[in-house]
Each structure stands twice: as C-alpha cells, then as structure tokens.
Amino acid sequence: MATQYNYHVNPAKEFIMKCNVGGIDRTGRIVIGIVLLVAGLAAPIDMTWRIVALVIAAIALVTATVRFCPANAILGINSCEGEGKK
Image (cartoon, rainbow, N blue to C red; front, side, top):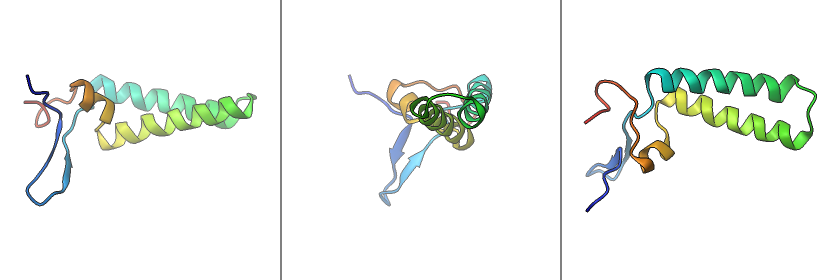
C-alpha cells in the first residue's frame, strides 16, 4: 500500500508544501515557541540547555508561521482546516 504525504512535486519540479498545521496545533506551537524563546534568552540556565531551548523555539515558531511541519507530513498528520485537508 502506497503512503500518501501532505506534499508533492508539481510538473515544474517545484516542492509544494500543503498546510498541515492549523487550529489548536498552531496556537500551541506559538505558545511553546514564545515560552522557550523567553526561557532561552532570560533564564539562568546552562549554555547547552539555552541553545536547545532556542532551537526548539525556532522550529516551533517557524512551523507555526508557515503552517507546514515536515514531521507531520511524514506521519500523515494534518490539523489544518479547509484547503489543506483531503
């Protein structure tokens, strides 16, 4: 059985990302991203944990902003309402 992902390559060989992050998933990513960003910048923590917090915050905020998560696409998860769902 073939696996179907939430992205495809069009005939012009351009990578198309369909919306797969929406609703409460997007809001949660924004909240978690902001909390980790503040913790990474202001909390008195070790440099290693500071970098980990900032990297995770960046990933959460970027995926919430562009409304596409590669991990969701691989796992077949789609929380986007409307045009992104099939």
